[in-house]
Image (cartoon, rainbow, N blue to C red; front, top):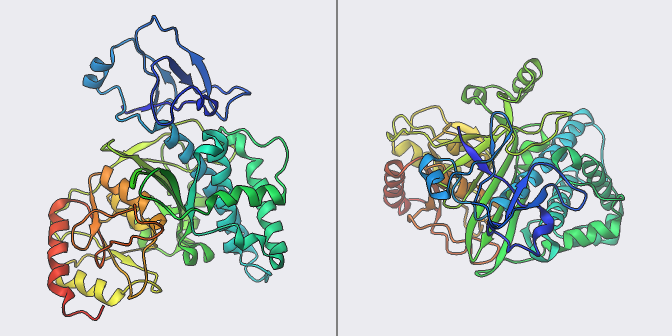
Length: 454
């Protein structure tokens, strides 16, 4: 049974270095008035090291006097623990963001005939940006949080956008009122317009080859979210140009592969007829991984009227073991704006990908491969388009830690150190469930590229 490292409380930043363990502290799931969502207890220095972890099935704290070396042999310590604090905060932030997006999407579907002076999708994206920025800053310290994202404060500060700003502030405050359910203290008073603008202002970075920053995709798959279909929230932490953790929130992702072939209205009906439980659910999930952990995890979205307790019944996921292209499932792109479907589908056919393709939106392709629902994902951008780092960072590390491979079309690792874009990307992105499939796809790209019109 997998065990999970606990998260250090938010106000320990001045005592502990970010991302590092300190053997003189242990932590539990109880809350205190002085912390963001965890309590801290000073451990006497004359005792042997103990490690607190959470048992996924019972959500109980577990401690053991077993020495760390012995625990590693027995598999009782989750490795690595370097970024477990940041990972816990990030998962909670994405959980709250998915809750916000679900509420908004339900409203859009019910009021689809009503015209708005602003796009509901813009409200959702900016609201997610605010929620994530607020939680990261509150729990990790604002001085330690910098965010790269597609939405910035200029969108809201325009004098002609007053109604949009009011809608964002209202949406954010309604979501933050639910913060205690996610184990996060709500603000003492509702946020005002100036506070929302200030919170979003920390999202104006351009990326860097050094230092630490977060990359946020607040609403990936706008077409899907607008019609009640799939979309995602992606959050990753990048340190010195390398992704160290990633979280994907996919509120409408079908948890059974066979459900992908049904219309979204049927999927919604199935979800209503079979309410989710702690152990099983039909749609919606949070998938996450940490660099070097060699594992990826999936947990359900927080159920209505439930309180979040880490790790929220998480289960390990891994890529498929299929290594034969004739048996592999290909993630078929739906969006046509920024990618070449003709080349991608022609390549899939030429290498023998004959299975019924899996039609999924944007970052959900990464989730599909990490969960073993598909084996191959390819994206080749149209001329002039540059891939954004926030659209790929979280998904890439999740697939890699789940046992798969993600590179450019030359086989090089994706480079997240060049700013907002994947500047050194060679032609496109190839993600596969294993090395055998990956090598075959890379060889096929080289063979087909010269004759293509890209």
